[in-house]
Amino acid sequence: MRIHYYRFPENTPEKTLLENGCAIVLKSEEEIYAETIPDEHRNEVEYIDRTIAAISLKKAKELMKKYGGAAWTEHYDRSGTFFEATPIKLSGNNSKVKYNKHL
Image (tube, rainbow, N blue to C red):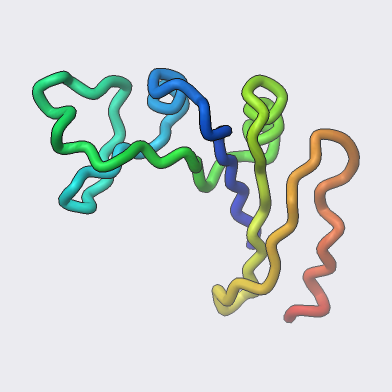
């Protein structure tokens, strides 16, 4: 199984992060998803996570082209054990992992 991730650059505006589905992490460690943070609740926010998980490879490449940042794929075997992470590149084939060696 493969799960693709994208991480926005450090200086990405809050509005862009929220519009693209980044989680708002509260001081209570709860994660919520919203397109804006109301001013009356801003003091409850710890930070906005810059990483989006479980997106398509196509979406990860689109975000890299538009905003920069980095994307990667985490590979898991059938038992759910993580065995490798590979960077996603804008050009070329991103599927060089041979799964039969991990089965």
